[in-house]
View 1: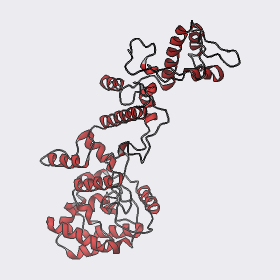
View 2: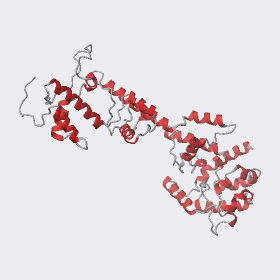
View 3: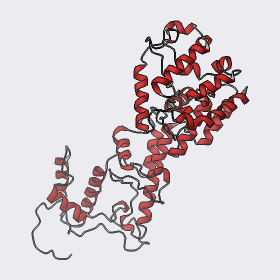
View 4: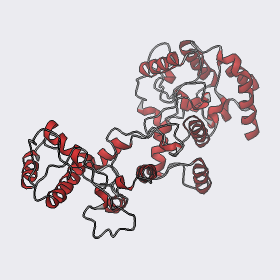
Length: 403
């Protein structure tokens, strides 16, 4: 019997070129609009009396008439899985409310009406019957997953994804709700019970299937942070003055593509936006203190870049003020210095390592002229902090004497 099914699939491939001429319109846009039209026209709810009636027992000739009618209306037999025969006079009364695809693309119907009738095979071929859809649902699902990976290089299928009517995909899997199946597989372990469970799980693992999406997304975010931090250190390895243990990522930063320093799977990853979402919405870390600690250990801070920037400025300003007799008026070119030699005792150096390279003079000029850091609800507090440090809001004009 299995050999017969394979033979039918091979026959279908021979007729594929010929039957493709029966499809009305060749472009993808037309196919999608036609599919939506089919589903809109078929809005009947399947009658409750069919739940106890075996529609596969209806005569083949009657079923064939329905298939011919469908072909006349839509140009093929790629019947959407949710298509229900409308309750209109143009369709046989016995089929009103029947899920047509579920009926004819079924091994039970094939075995009863087709297996031993070669003339019927020829009839169905003329209509473009999709023999591939007689495979078990698992086989169709796996074919869809393999094709999805060949196109997208991963199997992170969105929950709403339905396989399009596109020549990139086998006609046997058109309209398959691949994303919904993946979601149910993770949630309820559909297809993963019984004797084939281990084998099927192994097949999915071989494709790189992601069982825990939350952990996958967190690890991707974590990897991106580590790569960003590593590249920052490498770029500044000859300039220790700008070294920092805190990860500061611009809010609009997106991982560049075509950059071999980044893993391919991170290209175009919106790292800046993800950082903002983690801080503001607790993305990936809500009710998960272990993940929060992991991020903190690599230098992630829960305050945004603006808050972090102010904390560094006010810290450096406090040290400068203390060193200059409670007067805070550094030259524009002043940059927080690192120790004069790498072997210098860090304990005796007044400037913390994370502040080395901070352009304090420029930052305080921006405070004076642009009101930097002085917007929002904390503005009055920050002004008071600067006043207490002896900040000179209106410095004297003219060239400064070098200290």
